[in-house]
Each structure stands twice: as C-alpha cells, then as structure tokens.
Amino acid sequence: MASSKNHSNEPEKAALTQLKLVLPLLRPYKNAILTALLFLILGAAANLSIPVAFKLMIDLGFSAENSSRLSQYFILVFAVSIAMIVFTSLRYYWVSWIGQRVVTDLRKKVYGKVIGQSAEFFETTKTGEILSRINTDTTLVETVVGSTFSIALRSFVTFIGAIIMMVISSPKLAMYIGFLIPVVVIPLVVTGRKIQRLSRIEQDRIADSSALATETINAIHTVQSYGQETRERARFFEAVNRAFDAAINSIRMTTILMVMIGGVVFGGIVLVLWLGAKDVISGAMTAGTLSQFVMYAVMAATSTGALTNVWSELKKAAGALERIVELMHTENPIQSPPEPKRFAHTVLGNLVFNQVTFAYPSQPDKPVLKDISFEIVPGQTVAVVGPSGAGKSTLFQLLMRFYEPQQGEILIDGVNINQYDLLELRQQFALVAQDATLFSTSAAENIAYGRPHADSVVIEAAARAAHAHEFIENLAERYDTYLGERGVRLSGGQAQRLSIARAIMTDAPVLLLDEATSALDAESEQMVQRALNKLMQNRTTLVIAHRLATIKKADNILVLDNGELVASGSHQELLKHNALYGRLAKLQFIHNAVEDTG
Ligand SMILES: Nc1ncnc2c1ncn2[C@@H]1O[C@H](COP(=O)(O)OP(=O)(O)OP(=O)(O)O)[C@@H](O)[C@H]1O
Image (cartoon, rainbow, N blue to C red; front, side):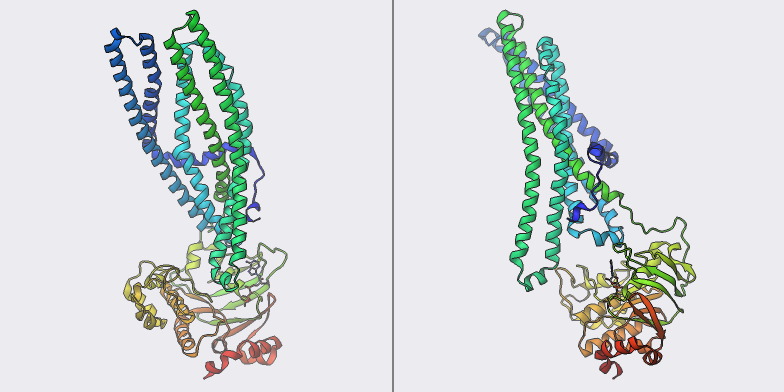
C-alpha cells in the first residue's frame, strides 16, 4: 500500500503536539484572533446572563400586579438575546476567516515543500497521494481552526461560566454534578486515542483512492483503448469503499462516545433536578433558583457534548496533521552547499565525468553506471549510444544533479557540480527531452517557460529559429493559443520544435538533448533536425543519439553498455573496432539513415 511506507510508529505520543504546527500559522493573524475572542467572550457572557433574568422572572411570579416589571424583564431578555446573536455571528465570521486564512497558508507551505522534493520522492510517492495531502488533509486542519477551535473555546467558556454560576446558584447541587466529571473525562481520553488512529487510517484510504483516480485519469487513453473502464471503476469503488469503512470506524467510535457522555450528563441532570425539587418543596430553595440552576446545568451539559465532538475533531485533525508533518520534515537530500561557488561570467561548458559509479536509491545494489570517465571539451558535441537500459538518460540525471553519484565526481569548468548553487547549476543546461512537456498556457508562455518575462520579439525569434513559427502562426490564436491540457494537441514534431524553442530561449551554455526515437515524417524530421543544428551551434552538447546524422556530426561518440563505457571514438573508428557499435549502427540508426544521408 503506497501510503504505508513511511508510517512513523511513534503512536499517540505525538497526538495533539502535532497541532503545534498550526500555532506559527496563527501568529500573523493576532488581531483577527483578538477580535474573534472578544466576540466570543461577549457572546458567552450574554448567553450566561439569560438564566439570571429567568430566575428573576420566575421568583417574581406571573401575577397581574407584577405585569410591568415582568415586561421590563422580557425586554431585557429580548435585548440580551439579540446581543448574543450579533456577537455569535460576528465571532463565527472572524473565526471562519482565520480558518480559511490558515488553511490557505498551510496549503502554500505544503505545496512549497512538495515542489522542492527530490526525484526519489516523486518516484516513491503517488501524485494523487500528494494531492490528497495538499487538499483533503489541510481541509481537516481548516475545520479545526475555522470551527472546532471556536466551538471549543465557546463551549469551554460557557462550561466554566455555567459551572461557576451553578456553584453560585446552589453549591450543594453543584457538588453532586461535580461527581460526574471523572465519569465524563475518562472515556474522552480513552476513545480520543482510538479516534486519532482511525482518522489517520481514514486519511490514508482517501489518499489511496485519490492516487488511484489520478493515475487512471492520467492514463485515460490507455484505459479506454484497452476497454478497461469497468475494471478501473471497480478498483476505484473498492478504494472509496475502504475509505468509507475507515470513516465509519471512526464515526462509530465518536457515536459510542456521544452516547456514553450524553447518558451520563443528562441522567445526572435529571437526578439533580429531582434532588433540587425536594429542596424547593421543603423551602430550602426558590423555584427561580432551581430553574436557573437547571438552565446552567443544561448549558454545561450541552457544552460538554460539544467538547466531546471537538475532542474527536481535534484527534482527527491530529491524525491528518501527522501526515502533513511527515511531509514537511521530508528534506530533499540534494541541496545547495552553504557557500556555493559562483559560475564564471561566461561558462565554458567543459564537462568531466571522473570515475563515476551510481545506483538509483530504490536499487542501491544495482549500479546503473560503473566507473564512467570522459571529458567534453567546450563547444564539442558528444553523442551517447547504447542499448536500451544502458544508462544513457541516467548521465543526464546526474549532470543536472537530480541524484548524487556514490563514487567519483562530475565537474563543470573544473568544479564539482555539488559545489555550485543548485538553481544556478541547472540554469547552465538547456534540456530537450524526448517528450515535450506542454503546460496548459499559451504557446508563447510555453516557449518562454524558462524565461517568463521575455518579450514577444524574443519569443518569436526563438520560435523562428526552432522552425516553430510557421505552425504557431497557423493556430487559431497564434502565440496566444492554449496548449497542453484543455488546449490544442500538437503533433509529435510540432511539440518537439516547441521544446527546442524553449531550450533556445534559455540560451544555456550546455545542451542536453535526448533525441526522439519516434519516427516523424520526413519533412517534420528535417525541420526538427534543422532546429537542433541551430541550437547545437557554439554549445557544449551531450546528445543521446538515435540518428545517424547526429552521430556522424559528433566530435566523439561514447558507447554505453550495461552501465559501462565500453568504447569511444568517431563513427568510422567504432564501426571498425567495436562489435556492439556495429550492431547498434545496423539496427538502431538504419531507419533514419536514408533521409539523414540524403
Ligand atoms: N528512477 C529509477 N530508479 C531505479 N532504476 C532506474 C531508474 N531510472 C532508470 N533506472 C534503471 O537504470 C538503468 C538505466 O536506465 P536509463 O534510463 O539511464 O537507460 P537508457 O540507456 O537511457 O535507456 P533508454 O534508451 O531505453 O531510454 C535501467 O536498468 C533502468 O531500469
């Protein structure tokens, strides 16, 4: 199960301490909190003063001669009730405002953290699960800050106020009620732990189903092509049903808690009322005082009920926060050094691999690059060839420092790449991958992805150089046409030219090119090739080559096989001396050979 992999096993110890994460988020909103608190206290005070008015009324008696005093009391109760409603509504507004603010900030934080995670993190964490953390888990936190806290505070203030007023009204009856308190608190603590654990499971199940849906929707074309909708539907149903079961488990716990506490509290009140009634009969207490006492007891009981709910909400949120905290504590192992070396003003683009050995973190015992050494002189073009899985793409990953080699070093202009600032390091590369990634923005913004503030003249120049201008001009809204998700679909060749334009825009000193293997029609192919030639001019280029033309033009060719650099040299030399290269040349480059040489 995807989400069980990084279970921290420190169980309830962490419990509510997780909620501490929320405190710093509250700090910037002191004024709003004070405002909300003010309305909270005013509302509670108004609420607590109502029974006093009722006591006065009842003790006054409902007789004709008291009619005008009675009216005054009723006006008082009316005024207090209105005040209570106004204060309560304002409190609601401010507390909800704080809740929304905090969850927005939390989402920003979580997203900010996610987007800086390592390649390894994204390999091992499902997209849908991450989305669930950002959306669902943070929503639980919003519930806490935006309503639970408020209910908790209001109930707490009301509870304390009601208890005090109960003691004032009748110390004896209040003492009886006091006996009930431990009976209420113990089940709260016991079930609270269970609820937190169950809630975490629930959130994990939701994350699982979200991961599943995201995966299926991303692969919808494949799903439908293979006619697997029914199976995918069933898989999703099963996942959401598991989430339902998990939710019901924690709801069941809360229900049990509510029954237990409700029973104790209301049973207790009836009992006390009975005892109080006897005192009224014997004359030890007025009817008004008993009514007042009972009203306070009901207030205290209702607050306890609310606090019970609050308790389970808090525990649920703590469960969700555990996940968020884990995410916030996941550090990308690849960081800039504390005092990074600066790149020279003009980067030469000298690349050196020095005895580099590397295994992916998921398979640490299986090195995919073994003792690789080579050098690329500034301005040279070096082609990498080798069978599938030989480790060609891995070279790029290491150069851009998405992973760190276990042995050996990689140098740019004589400095180990781990000495540079990470952002600056990656800015030295223009990457043209096999599949162009398009964002759901305009063609212009897609081209200017690496230089968002570039003006339209520069963008168009890049598009022209990449032979993309012609087809963009033919799109409905030219450079403003939406591409990617929800936008127009580009053909393979068009998308490639667009990504070449993107690389031209960055004007980085080193070009990393992963030649597309997919066959394009001859004309498209030629245009892509011309665009690439333009891009390679005056740049140190490392190219994963699939075309004979590229290979022939390269200053040097590296032959990789099973993670080892087995040969290097020119096309002719390798043809003569390297059997693997001979085979590759025949099999892999042949289909491009006709038009390349033509
Ligand atoms: N993220 C990863 N985690 C674990 N193993 C990986 C990862 N990426 C690649 N590998 C493995 O590393 C080896 C080299 O992969 P790489 O992608 O560098 O090969 P390649 O030469 O570029 O292949 P192709 O030409 O098919 O793209 C393969 O055995 C592959 O299974």
